Every structure is written in structure tokens, then in C-alpha cells.
Image 1 (cartoon, rainbow, N blue to C red):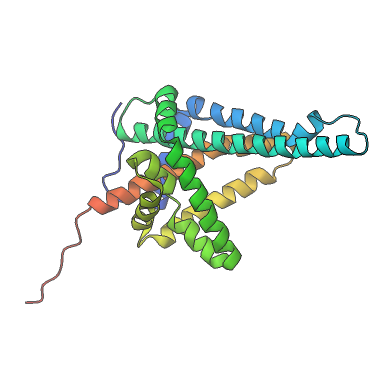
Image 2 (image 1 turned 45 degrees about the horizontal axis):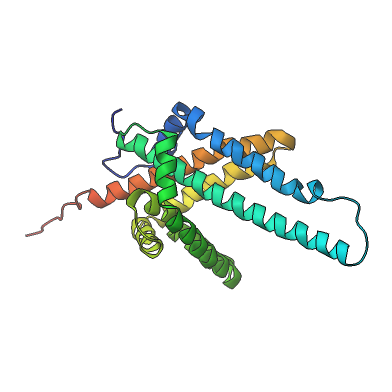
Length: 239
């Protein structure tokens, strides 16, 4: 497999086009994990109904209510971790495709699991930063979202720790805020459109489009890395 790693910064159209090409060629490998995640999500939504039965009053009713709450929380934590693993698998898999390495789901899974501690910790730190940003005002949350959008890609593809990955993401995005914001805006529109479609069609489309979004951000990451290696523009001497 030949490398398709960018040697220069990519334009918006190139990022989406290359991501679509990789996504469609490898859809049979990268879509199924998201379908499984969707099924687990559906189970999580119906857990209270699945464990519910005729209630009585007093301590028994209280115990059942607590059991439902604890079970639901644990299930959603499991789904969140599985979601991070699947995102890590997609990043590693598409990264291997871009680098010209023969990717497999098994090798991508093994690598992601080996980095799982840093992936989870990075996600927690990033979630706290974004929550604080949106609590302060909407604008800081958007700024932090743009600044740290490539954090997980750095953790997976560069093997860095959470704090280093946050700094590295900020470094990669520096000077390309408008480009990154435009990409995130288009991604938001894609998610909004697919999730707005009623019934099962919208749910399935939302699942199917998720690996494409991760692939788009992976190409953004490689584009920003290629920009670093580009020689500076020549200076004009007036002497």
C-alpha cells in the first residue's frame, strides 16, 4: 500500500475529498464498530425498562430505584469507554492508511488498548476544559474546542501524554483557526442533518457518518503536520 501522506498543507476541499476516498474504500472495516456502539447505546436507553418490574412501597422500591440508577450510570460509562476505543481504532486505522501501512482492525485495537489510559485521561481533561469554557461563556468553549480538537489524534498517532497532547494540538492549530473552525462547522452541519432525519434512518446515518468525521479530522492532523515541514516563504530583499 502506497503512502498518501500529505507533503504540504491541504485545502478544505482536499481534506474532505481525501477523507471520503479513504472512508469509502475502507467502510467495511471502519463502520461496523460504530454500528455495535449504536446497538449498545440503544440497550443503554432501555436499561431502566429492562430491569423494571412491579414495584412495592418502602425500602424495596427505594432499592430498585437506586439499582436502576447505578446500572444505567455504569452502562453509560462502559459505552463512553467503548466509544473512545472505537474512535482510537479509527484514528490509528486511517493513520496507517495515510502512512502507507497495511491496516487491520486487530492491530489498531491492540494499539488503542495499549494507549487507553492516556486516551481516557485526555478525554476527561478535555471534557472538563470544554465544560468550563461553555459555563464561562459560549465563545471560550468554542475557542477551546478548536484549539484542542486534535488532542486525541496526537495521543494515538504521536504517543504523547494528555498534557503534552493538549499543547501539541494547540501548536498544530496555531495560525489556522479559521480553517479549523470551517471544518468543524461543516462537520456540525453534517451531524445536524443526519440526526434530524426521523426514525431509524437518521439514527443509522448518524452512526455511519461518524467514522467519516474522524477520518476528516485525521487528514486535518496530517495537513497541519505537513504545514510544519514546509519551508518558509522566501524573503524579498530590497537591497
